[in-house]
Structures are given as structure tokens and as C-alpha cells.
Image 1 (cartoon, one colour):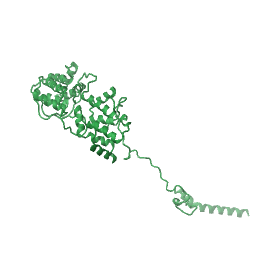
Image 2 (image 1 turned 90 degrees about the vertical axis):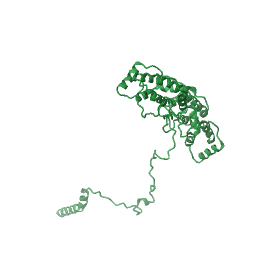
Image 3 (image 1 turned 180 degrees about the vertical axis):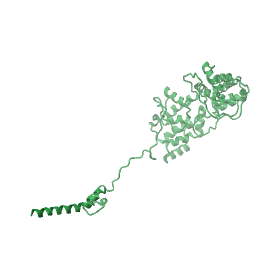
Image 4 (image 1 turned 60 degrees about the horizontal axis):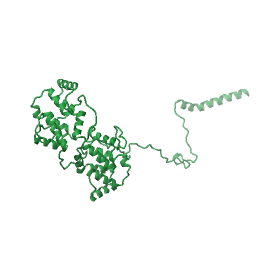
Length: 378
């Protein structure tokens, strides 16, 4: 009996091993053993399970920060924050800077043409200090009055003067700085009051009924205040306003009036005859240069170039030492200091051109202050 039971146990064990052999082989092969899914409702599509409340749920997607629908941002001056009570906005876009074209015609003592390029390097001994800003000062005072409705604070006023005189900002740049400032924006004006401000700032007058209605219609149709401001900036009237203060408008409008030169501008032109050519001016030449300077047809640098590279000057065949001395008188209003004089003479001896040396002086801080004192663009 025991022998029979033992034989039966061996038989059953062998049968079990044989039955499991396919499964063991499949597992050894690395293939996963997958059990079929049989839902309780007999439907093999989980999406159709009536008890499954996740069907159709959306996966949240993070908003794209570079979306085309982002709100407009008023840019802020990246260079430095303006002082207290000073409009802090800075318009986008690169300002056009100062006009640099040569004068038309050829007044006595002035050649046509101006070389390209702007070599670096400043003469030594540039003093520091503030200067009178002439027409720019009046321009800034006017914006405080017409935009902010108050007198300028001294710190803020100097900030904006420096933007024009030292950084070459245009009238449009400064006007937008005021109009985009928190102080002005906090006034929260309606469109009609806003347009009256623009007429007074850019046209120097109250609005006319037809023009104001035109702009109100544009704004009602969705035109932004920034675009409306640009419409005023690109006008002839704004070009005329800026011309009267002696600064570039920054718009596409062209002034249609001629400014008579004041005494300071005439004195600047007369000074070029004296410091460069060593003589008094002739009436026609003085008038020509003065009018072009007053109407921003030339800058102080372009005018000086006209004298230093005129036929009259070049025919004089001055040696380098006299050339450098006259540059000091013209651009720095003084005799040369020994170190600076030797530096410039050394540059010429090593092959620097007279034009390169000329622009070294023209780019000096001292000449910038001289131009500011006479109320012209450097």
C-alpha cells in the first residue's frame, strides 16, 4: 500500500512539472505575462465605463508667457531710476539723436562734405560741473507745466536736461517720459481731457473741434493712447515746437518755419571764425552759418568741421602744433595743458589723421558744455 501511494505521488509531481513547463519558458524569455482585462460590465473600453468619472477630463497646460495677447507694458529707463518727483517712464525704440548733416551751400571759409567715422578718445583734462541748458531748460519747464501742471523740481529738471544734453534724447523721448510717468497716469483722465493735453503739448494750442472729434473716433475704435501720442509726435506742428527750443523733434514731421538765430548762436558762429581761422567773420558767411545752426541744419561739430577742413584753413599749411592749439581754443576754450598737448602731438606723429584728432576734441565733455552754453546741438 505504501509503495502504491509513493508511486502515485511521483506520477502527480511529474505531471505538475510538465504542465508548468510552458509558463516557465515564457517567463525565462523575458516576455511579460499579461492577464486580460475583463470589466465587470462586460465593456472592454474603460472610456465607456459609466462609473468612471475621469472621462473627458482636461490636463491643465501652463500659460505661455510669450503669448501674443500680453498686455502692453510701459518701459522704464534701464539706465537708472529718475529722482523723486521725476517722471520715470522711458519710451521704447531708439531715439534718432542729433542731426549731423552738412550745410547746403558753401559760406566763406567752409568746405562741403563731412567725413564718416567717429574716432574715440578725449583730450585730457575735462573739467566737471553743470552748465546752462538754454532752450532745453525752457523745453523741460514747459513739459512740467503742460503735462504735470506744476513747476519743475530742481532735481527732476536737471535729470531731463541731462537726458537731452548728455544722452542725445529727442523732444519726443522727453515728452513721452512725462506722458508715461506714474504722476501723469495717476490723473486717470478721460479721452477728451487726455487729447486736450496732447494738443497743448505737441501743437502749443487748444484743440479744434474737427481734429479732436477725429481722434476721439479713433480711440473709440480701439486705437491705443500710445498710438495717438505717436500721431501727434509725427506732426509738422511738433517739429515747429521743438525747433523753437533748439532740439530734435524725434518725429517724422518736418518744420515748415525758419528760426532767426539769437545772439548766442551768432556768437558761436563768430567764435569759429576767430578760434579756427584767426580772423573776423564776413557778413554772408556769418549769416549762413548762424541760420543753419539755429534751424538745426548743422550741429556744432559739423560747423566746426566746415571751418577746420575748409580750403582757407588747409591752404594755410599749419603745422601739427598750431593745428592742435587751435583745436584746444575752439573745443575747450583754453590753451593746451602740457600733458594733453604732448599726447595729441604723439598721436599725430604715430600716424593718426587730423580728422581723427578733430573728432577726439569734438567728442570731449568740454565742447559739449560749450554747445550747451550757446544753446546749440553738439
